[in-house]
Amino acid sequence: MVTVIHQQHDAFGVLKVVDTPKMRSLFFDTSVEQSRLYFEAPMRLPFEYQQVIETQLLNHHQTHPVQRILMLGMGGGSIAKQLNTLLPNASIHIVELRQAVIDIAYEYFQLPNVPEIEAIQEDALVFIKEALSTYDVIIVDIFNDDGLPEAFSTTEFQTNLLNNLSPKGLILFNLWENQAATAQTQTQWVLQYWQSHAVSQSNIVKNYPIPSTENIILHIQKN
Image (cartoon, rainbow, N blue to C red; front, top):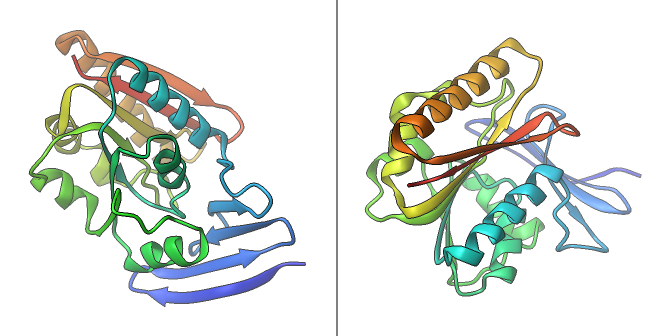
């Protein structure tokens, strides 16, 4: 049985929260699932790409203690919730364009309302350009129907990411290697940019393909 427990429109389209007997899901305009919560395992990260992000961040924490995390894109807040449990003293800033998504994450997906997590309603492009402080880890997880929005594959955005990263800090960039031409183009451009940047700046760049969802987690550690 599938039940729509919440639906609303904002300036960007439709948002739906849908329940089945085992789980709750967040959908935007399309049928693409944005977030998921298992009722019997609410702390479980449901998607493999999220698990890879968590593993990479925790491995980094072993040698470079993580105190400040910036997340661009929220969804249901699954990763933020998990990181708050695993790193309770870390400060987590989440930048999300849609206030409705922020409200849904708190009301329907158990995002903790604690001082360590600050949800910021703002365009991530503007925030990363004007941020007044640096972060130990930056997670980029922003998609539209076609994949990564073009503005997030520009040289300016990549430069701003690096400018907001602390020494030896880590960027985890969620990319989508979908067969659609637009998604392929944006993903390949970002991958090529950072590979060339690794050569010129001695940053550590690794790729972690996720075959189950066509995602690629791009790992960039600042020199």
